[in-house]
Length: 404
Image (cartoon, rainbow, N blue to C red):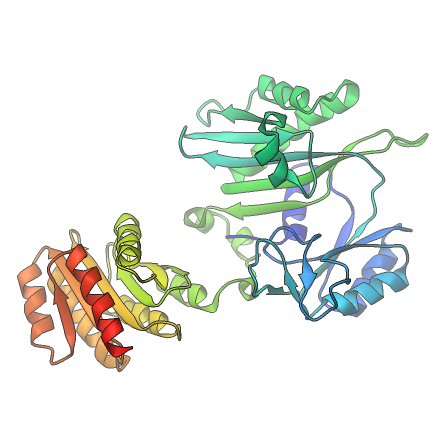
């Protein structure tokens, strides 16, 4: 699950992490009121969508010379003008695809006098089974180019979760960022705070870009501040964090994926034309691959899990068919924990319930497979049986091409 920048900053602040002052806004009037509550005279108006690259993004409804989704305002009047341009319009970034995302929320922050920008992120390294802290002296909008062209400027510090964060991890981060004196100490402290937040909230990714060093003044020393951050959480652990789950913004998610989550279905929409219903993530990936191998493209990833019921199967069919691009459906089920006869009954009931009008190929294997095939054969529906995965892929492609 993803959350917005302003929500992530509020969570980090609870762990003592320094953030720039800011206030979220849903309307132009709230954006103006937010600016009036901040010290000024510089403000930053930020579009809040679940995608990166906002600063370089473009609004569909505005001209090509219009500013992107992160704008510096020099007055309250400019904040108002920017809010009017951004709210309700569609922001297209490198991460949204051509469709873009509608901006429904803004985050108005106080301007920070920046001396230097850094990059700091944390994620779960599944290869090593450790938590990885990734830092670079080259923070900002072009971190992807840094990773591609000068990877030596990126340092990874791995932490064994069984041992937890140690002082030497903080020192490694501070030295990698080439910080000295008080800023070095701040970086060590910040690293510990972010690690504690990452573990306590069951994050699977936490990115701060940029982490900035503010300019020192006579009245205030330089300090490290989180200027922008993205945060995502392990969905399987959200039952432990009802406060975090409450931050979910469903307007940022695909409606079909939201519907699938109600039935504990793992669904991701893709751009193809063959709908897939499979049990098990690995089998689902193999099914998608073999469809492409046979000349067509999968319309979705859909894992019904190990305990599919008639209700879940019916819901899966409805979700698949809600996609107007779907021209055929391939069901690929291995009945290990599940029984093939139960799945077959669910498929028949679901096909009748949704008034199935596209070709359907079903491959069953495993417990009670013969009973399952008998149920499908006696259903009176135009269900095409398949003997194995290769046979199933060839048959669904042939059926779709026959209709076309």
